[in-house]
Each structure stands twice: as structure tokens, then as C-alpha cells.
Image 1 (cartoon, rainbow, N blue to C red):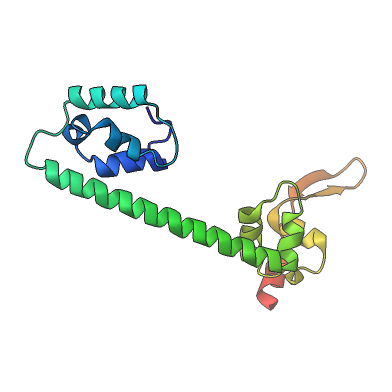
Image 2 (cartoon, one colour):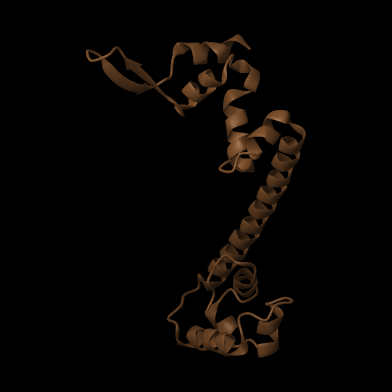
Length: 170
């Protein structure tokens, strides 16, 4: 019935009708009200949901009310966490928009706000690295290749103590 069991409508239904018998005995208008302004799930799907609630085994003990209470509490916590994540995303985007380093990183096609924030959080400041090659080496983005003709040929990721020293100098 619900593609995402933690979607807004699914949570509305699960919060309002915590027990299967509550859902089975609900009116169609009560179920439609859980959809908010949308039209999904449709009436046929809501009727199927009620039928599933009627035929479920469910909890048949005295713990039912405790389970319903716990379910409502967990849904409330989930919504609070989602609100916190949204607020943090807004703050990260605002900080990146005012940071020169953040703007540069976000201008790269493969780097979004979360990746840019993680990079900045890891390196502190781009000025911690003398050259771009030191930054690439610190992250392992550029392999170092040693070649002396035919006798020596090796490649490795460049992570030297120089990059770590650059971080500790600041």
C-alpha cells in the first residue's frame, strides 16, 4: 500500500491508527484525512489496507496498548529527527554558500553540500596545504608514480607525513 513505510502519509496512518483493529474500524473519511492534501493512496488501496488490518493476527495480549503507545512515541521521535536533519542541512548549505572553499568545492560536478562539508571538516582550511598536489595526496586522489627507466616502476597513493604535518601546523 505504501512504497515508503516512513513516508508522511504512512506515518499519519500508523500514528492515528496504532492498532490493527483501530484501522479496521476507521471510517473512510478518517483514512482520507491522513492523506493530507494528496490523493494517494487511493480509496481502493485504503480499503485493501483496512481488509489487511481485519485479517491480521496482530497482538492479542494486554500489551497492545503499550505497543500502541510505544509506536506513537517512535513516530514522534522519527519526525523530530527528520526536522533536525532538515535544519542541519539548511545550516550546512548557508555556511557553504558564504565560504569560498565551500563554493569552490560545490562547483565541482561530483561534490554536493554534504561531501563539501565533510571535506572542509576533515581538512579544516584549504590553506593547510601548500599545493593542490598535497591536498590530493592527503585524500588519496592522486597516485604517486616513481619510474627510473626500466629498473624501478611503482605506484602508490601519496599520503606522506607532510600532509599530516600541514594539518598540525595550523
